[in-house]
Amino acid sequence: MKSLSPPVRRFAAVGLLVCVLGLAWGAVLAPIGSWATNAIEARDEARFRAAREAALGRDQASDATELASLRADAQALLLSAANEALAGSLMQARLAEITQATGVRLELMEALPPAKHGTLVKLALTVRAHGAEHAVKDALLAIETASPLFTIERLTLRAAEGGVRVDMTVAGFWAVAPQAGSGE
Image 1 (cartoon, one colour):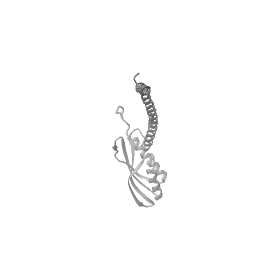
Image 2 (tube, one colour):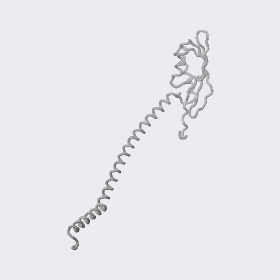
Image 3 (cartoon, helix red, strand yellow):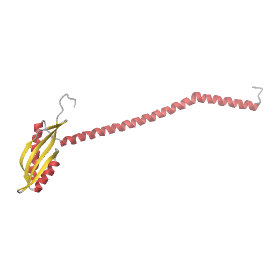
Image 4 (cartoon, one colour):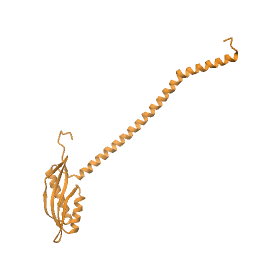
């Protein structure tokens, strides 16, 4: 290096210093920076996942509460009885209450054969009644809006002496209780 002029020696020394610093950066500082960046990204990802899981947990809890509420609402629409015969009797008693409360006189109430629909059994009654026009209208409205849910599947109205004669088929549903050990 003695043969080089002092400005070239300075330039070579600065160049060597830059190379040493570059190697130190590449060997030590760059991996530390990369590791720190990866650690920050991993921390942010963990925070995001924790927040998402907490939100999902809240959503699942509210979904379970909503599902339980819907099941209770649906159960309220069904005839609640231990067996099919009691459900049919309950339906007949409820229809008798409705017609009596509205001033309609029952002439006939006859059970039709039940029809199974999955876990539900459709119970139907043929009903013949007589009453004033406004009483019959009130009775029909009460039947359709009753709890448990009843539907009027067939309806015939005829003018009769002193009011209206009604022939109708009214249906309600009863839930079949799951068998023990059936997995339902």
